Image (cartoon, rainbow, N blue to C red; front, side):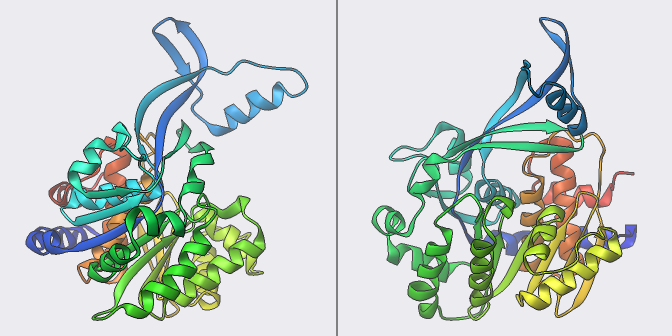
Length: 372
């Protein structure tokens, strides 16, 4: 499902949809972070030059060797940028030309400066202050070290008092895509979802909308909390066409909660896991995106598309959120799962190589000039 002919066809469809993309309305939330991307020093050669620890296993070995003693770890800042699943996904959607309204934790009462450019690309509202993340990036993965105390400010009471229940209902009602992401970090998200189901969803009229949900690495949450969240996700299917997005690790965690065998992470094993998860969590579409490919399951059928993997990415923090934005763009344009997976892997492929969100033209160009 990823040949030059299919990529060229997808690129042509994207370019032909420019005007339609500009009319698409989305409403995304609810988190917000200030991300500092850092490298871990292996050897410092002089004041201006160092060698980084390239692999996560090297970092693990360095820490393990210091157990029972102590050690010094030097971190070198690469960039400070907007972060959080929601802002990154929404910023990427805005880059395509989609109309984006964002509600989250971007600074209160004043917007944090790191979200300044974002606020010029999208309509943004904030009910609290952002969390902070030190993202230790390696060539084969990343370690996200979060400071989350301020995330308690994202709750239904603050949404109602600082944004407005009626305004929230209007945004959901006027959007073709609603994104509610980063469940794991927002400890009161279940309460928010309950309120949305009780107070907002019964008021919805018109065509069914897409609802994208990303749990975001739920390993630290209790099995009872995760099961409750999954129950709420399924309840949203009454009102929306729900897309539940997972990376490979998250699919294993959810699989274990559901009592599934999760040891087989081959393409065939992951496809089988996806089918079983979707049968037990019956949403419209389940997406699983490892680093080198992605798959989607709807009504038990699996689509799988090879990605544009690179062993030396410029950035990895936000790659999954860019995949999500690209997949949702495809679905908003009426693409099937396979085509939407292709727009997803192309969006993330462009981002990890350039550290920038692609425009629609960039995305088409990437598809036409697929990296070997």
